[in-house]
Length: 340
Image (tube, rainbow, N blue to C red; front, side):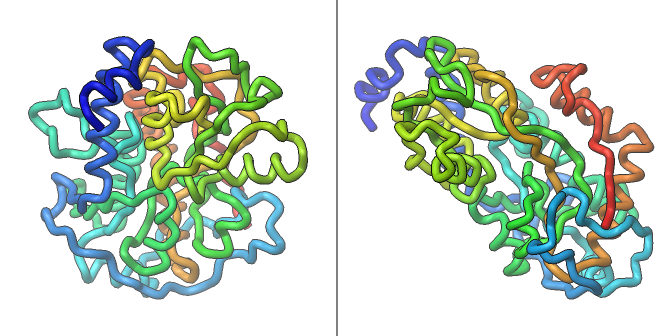
């Protein structure tokens, strides 16, 4: 796109919006680069395909997907954990473009190559506990939204910590930890828009969502059920949720539907957009792992128990998310875990 066309597309967004777009576009181009943690060994190797014991609950009997994870355990004698220990590092699928979740801060000149954010803190905590060292090597892999499940099933990564909602349909393909975060779907749109929320003000509007996301599943289901206005256009899907913000800034769509926690961070990046209306779902994020790796799932659940008790979860929330989600948000405390 030429500079003239870009300026024309951004007319009305102002200098701040243009700057935000430049940062977002730069981030999107970098998305598929292999990653390595500054605490790791710098390699871009892939994780192993260890086979654990036990099988996740079948999705066809699932009613509360967030309650389908096995009980926590500190036992590390299982096949999957042994394979990770023998290998010497944990392979983790993450996002590197979600502000305050998993991203690189361009203003942090001392650690400009380091990934930071709430999900990154949790990934390091899991690695530290399993490998027994605060400097445990982690090999991060940038995984697009629609490639999270394939990355786990192929063995490219051991776990995915990437704002991934626990759903009954996903339980057919991957195992999940107990929930570590509560959020809900919301609408993101320009402040000047007449959209009020997830309601009839979406009539005739072009809505963007990420392919393979719970947002798209909700939009599609509601469109079929008639609970979403029939004139809403939900055909715009993108590989990564952040791409929707770019489409919104360029005027190619009128609104974005995504997790409120992610939308709040995007609104913090670009003050010309805002959340419209209240959350209209309850979504629980979980750490995703391979089906059958029950030893790893139980161990991660124990890490989550310890992380909450130690204050680590709260400290990470305060550092990364309280500025956008606020201290009195339902997301401000970890969700209560229930096990199968």
